[in-house]
Image (cartoon, rainbow, N blue to C red; front, side, top):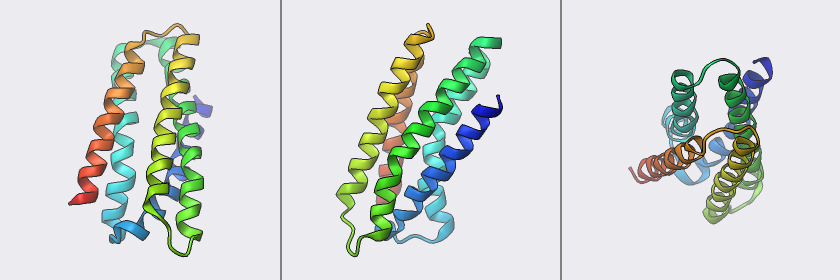
Amino acid sequence: MKKTVLLFIASVLLTAVFSYSLNVFLKEDFITLTLKTMLIPCFTWSALLLFASVKLTGEMRQRYFYIASLVCAWGSAALVPGGLYNFLATKPDVKWSVVSVIICVLLMSVLFYTWLKQNNFSMFWWWAYNVLIVVNMGLFCLSAVV
């Protein structure tokens, strides 16, 4: 359980690098930027973990949490290059941020599928991730426009 918590903490910190770099495009105050870029992405993982807490028990729940934390950490790490680019480029292009997010989401989907399958989980969990991430991305896009 300790590894799982540490991986989720690392994920939040890595995502924060990317999220705060988006201010070059969004030009928001700290609170609004945090709400748009950190809380909305947490929606997917929070919903999945909450649902797993209800539906899974014992060892299966612990394995699921660990797999989810690994997937989340890898996805968050995939965002870091895009965040660094936004911070370091003299005139960052928003397209690279979009590409970073797409790579992150695709990487997480592939890793989640692979690790869930290896651990004999129902593909329901993979589909749940994909549906929730689409909702997540839709919420983020709506928030960026508002």
